[in-house]
Image 1 (cartoon, one colour):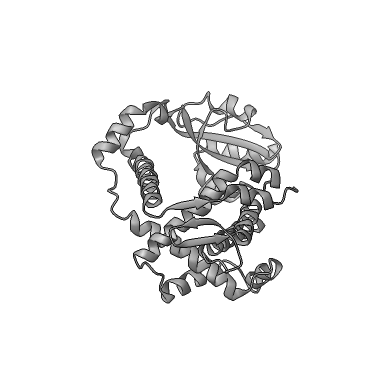
Image 2 (tube, rainbow, N blue to C red; image 1 turned 135 degrees about the vertical axis):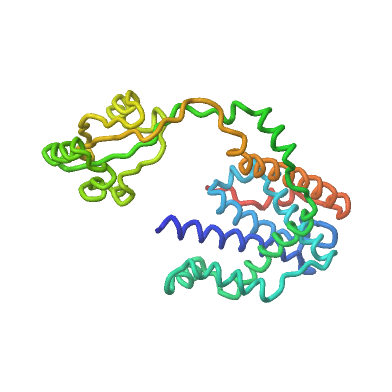
Length: 316
């Protein structure tokens, strides 16, 4: 549960960073250290953004300074996207924002959402601005890349045939089990199995492990995924055979091999969706890079890196 809330808070930080990146205004008395088209970022704002990226990445000031080029590039790319959105009048509606607010808040029971913001000294209105600009960056990007064509069946098949080693699978067993606390209990169950009773029914009645609700069905396993004492027994069984009694730290077990998949290469139909996702992701990444390179030609970028480095904090 705690990990879930940490992941959700990470999303809040992402939106917070997106808001900072979207400000793009510099006071008359402040020096602009990053300029992207008509958008300017002052020294104070740039250092503020870098500190939040440092927090997000969990690195020291020295590590940030060593990787300053990639960090500044992140700031530049975000602002290039926002400048493209401004030029093309891509905006986020109030309805889109409210729908996103509701979706995020429903993941926090009770007052937890407000408590998280309070601990980070973030005002709710400020957070909504963060969220709005994070969503805007995503919407602009999705709009710009909307014409990317999805993977064709021919492309998918070519990928499959060129990467057969990626789809090799080891020998696997489909297993079910019954687990009891004592050997005496298991002896009684084995006697009932010999009389012809169904193992799945007995698992539901007597097994003490969670999969008992599924009739003892465990799923598929390859060598190396089970405890050694169990593997030595079950991988010597044929489909339909039941193991001898095996004792482990979890209790007293018997296993049955339901079926076997011999080692080989996954069938093409089983891999189509997986390959499509890889190809489409690759196409999107390639188009995204080309799009940003083009934006850098349209909106000139000027960076005063030396000025930024001179004022960066060095402590861990």
